[in-house]
Length: 67
Image (cartoon, rainbow, N blue to C red; front, top):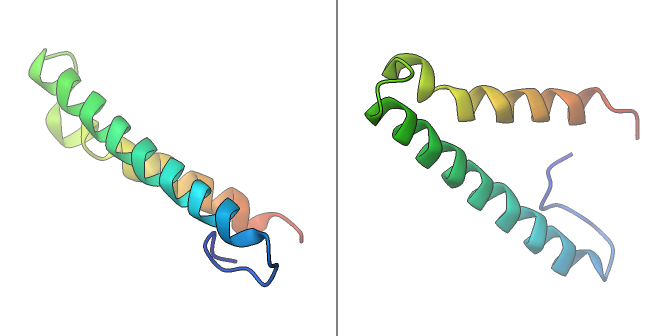
């Protein structure tokens, strides 16, 4: 089930809020990964994939969750 899809009347605002949290969370993690690369703490090919892997894991959890 997609985060932005819902059939409840009051679900529009909640879906919009969750979408904003996801978007800004991803941007924040990508920015943090970029900082870690610039400080030479983490290799670039690993650091820039971390936000993708985090969100893939979150999607995996939601897909396997029984509704």
